[in-house]
Image (cartoon, rainbow, N blue to C red; front, side):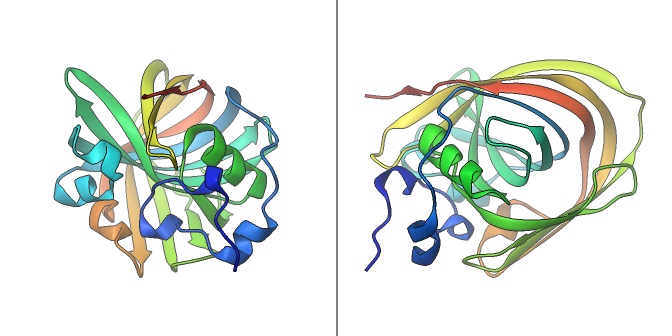
Length: 234
């Protein structure tokens, strides 16, 4: 029987569970935190509520109020582990007076990125395949290749000219040993507001909180971000 490697057993929604045969072939972590990456992306917002709270790990769920959901599809052109594509679902939470984000769903088409994300930051990455492009009227789709079948696609309609942006926040994730890590995420880039048609299908609970429909969002034409070393709770 193949056991889960301790550093990979992080909390996420059922769609991110790793099958034993995948765990057996995964490499060791090749790049520790921090990471600096360059990418393009589609991002959109949705409502929070009970389903979003249920998607959070137990170690975070009781401490915060879920405010909103952020979905995204990302095309990384430069990272410490090479280029790859990604789909994600984040629950935005209020922790006292602070607003933070917790990634509860994430999939990539790179095994080394999967290992780095889980080991460095407790990001619950699984594997998927991707098709399409990021652009006005273009559709980008992510489809599961392991575990529970699911599919996420997004098609933007740009409604505004490009504007520069700079933002910083903390990502809070629950590690395999139960500790919660908070990592500073800093992003700068250029984006255009868009209405994004989103489709979400799954044999699991993903569509209950990462919802399909038309959402307000943005096409991020270019961005550079850094994700730092997490500060772990004691």
